[in-house]
Length: 396
Image (cartoon, rainbow, N blue to C red):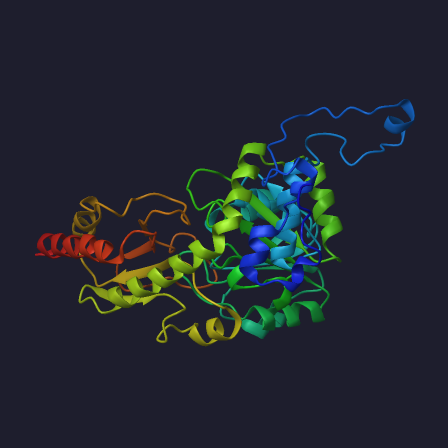
């Protein structure tokens, strides 16, 4: 007889929940993992059944057993009332926004938001009659002064994309809720394992599962979770767009879920070690990492977060662009590419100045974003040590 899933899995610790959430071997002949269900058509046994839509499934875009396994697991992990799975992190964010605002509404967005989020707000929402205002990410409870009678939602991201400002999410949520607004959060940096969004006042939380849920840099997937009050609107919006992820990607995300806690812990540990090492480098002006005591957002991070991921920023002391190129072009272990959260270390140059509107981006030197993977830290340091030697030589 195959094993049934644990009763009341919420009583277990985080790692145990990640291993068991969304699994029911008894429903699949004892096999541990939910198989990949591919398909569009679902057959009904009788005329009466199809007329009344009886049955758990009706069409492949709305749900499959594979999709249910991931949404049930993520709902449990995030502390939500429900979750939908989409083809990417950005699509998960668009579902959250479209579920929260309509033509004639006002939306407040942190100036530190993921750039494609801004492009969707400015290029789509604005075109459909939603007024968008960007605000200083460090505003905290002062967000209330920016709210208008038509303000329906506020988007937060902590820490900020690329620039890593911390936001006082509970204070913002309290102020927004006092005015009847909805709080949407991009929680990709921390995942619910390090920052439980709904327990901190967030109504709709978005995760680019492409990053740490995947862990392998080989799939695109997004998750939008919500409280009981807001999930019906999220689910309706998801169904209206039929924005479903592919079954193979959902299966890979489920597989990544089982080890996410271990990987995230190691990314965070190695990331902090590398951040401290870079902080002491003579070529570095400052490091943007909320886990460092010197970071302006450190107190908020210590209060609200249980750890850090492997992503942070570095501001170099002023050097010519050719010197930065010399540093990056010769690296052996750090790849240059977008996304992050996989097993490999990455670095990209970045500049927020062209698209910041509510705040001024003037870091004082070239900016780099690092993702610290799972390689040996000593090897990563040696790779960067050689890179800094090239930088100094090129800078003269």
